[in-house]
Image 1 (cartoon, chains in turn red, blue):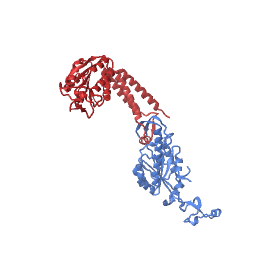
Image 2: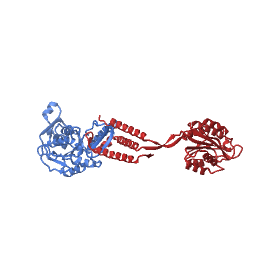
Image 3: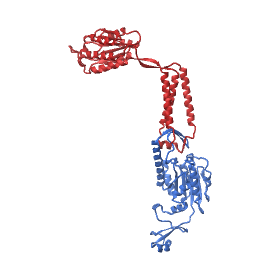
Image 4: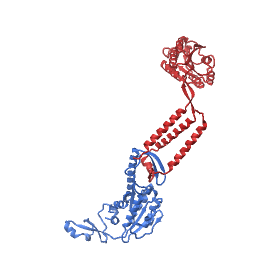
Length: 306
Length: 268
């Protein structure tokens, strides 16, 4: 959070501190409303009065006043706001291991279906592109705001075959994305990078350029054999988590088609949000006023004699 | 029966028989107390033959020995005694002390024990000079005062102590028992002015007479808990004194002399 007028904030804090001191001083003075009692320690022991309630009201007053003071200083909060235009690239692994059937019908087909779910969840205006990668990466659908066209292009994703060049896919996506704006890469893979550019370096580069990579690892814990081979399809989860972390994204592990679709749909909502500084003066002012009103009503309602 | 008569009766009652004993000391005095059924061991010279003839059963005349009593009193004048509903409970305590010393007759001697010391024994009627001027609040240290009483008073003294007993140390039970064995002790426990109902609800501020302020919310739950705790405290105090062989009573704000008489089962 940042404030436009720090001096106002300082003055506000000083005013609140002065008010708190004055209030405390006034509270120490004996008034006719006080009940004179022989032994306060016994009273406290006997009645176990709820001392936290007046403290809570005092705290509420202070917080409410602080809210108003902040509003006067015109604060700006960095909060996730819906993006009207942004760019997303979905990188789908098409290496041989994606033909594995531990995810029904196959990992590749499940990834395709999930990509459709992602596209469906993305708000209009978001430009989406698709890259398929195995031993090399290729653009299947260039960035487009026409989500139907992109979804249709998913049919052109090649059948699973070959090695896994995660770094190359990330590099190609970075080249295809615009130099600025809200940019996101979704990486769906089941394998270990075994050729091409170092994906870790690419992830660091993307993170430095504010392009988060959301990685999705697909496959059951037992994995499965790559069809036509004796090789077992495994996931390098630590590596995928690392790419996400260094670039500012998140990692999700999915074990079936439903989980994959849900994860992508969730990403569709997340990636359509962008952290932006917004003027929060009105919000703080309203919250402060509401807090004061609540404190006043509660204090008035509970401060009565029978 | 007056307070003095009650003291004389207690003085002549064998301790091991307890309060229900029918045996009254067969003294040489002339103050008639009552007629009662003859109990084996009674002096046959005390049999009232006329009453025996009327009732058809042996009747014994009970008289009290005419002895000089030593009456001593300790009154708590600490700030906590300055609290009350309509008046400070200290006023009621002062009335009770006056009634106490007002019970003195003949050669009875009166001794006042306050925070500032022990007044010399004196023949006294009515207000005692030690308590007549209980104007200024003084700290009340029951441990010190009761130990002073134990050291300064002659055996058999009738000792009255009036306080709210907030400062009575838990370790004092042995001292209380010693005092109870040595003297005819009476403790008047000041009844909490808000014994029946705490007059507050909601957000309240309680200011202690001896310092301390607490701001809190007092609702029905707190009021119930308070009422229960006050009753338990009073019962516990009375029980403590009773165990130490003290006569006990409640000092009510409304009437100090009446409270004293009630403790003795006497008329004010």
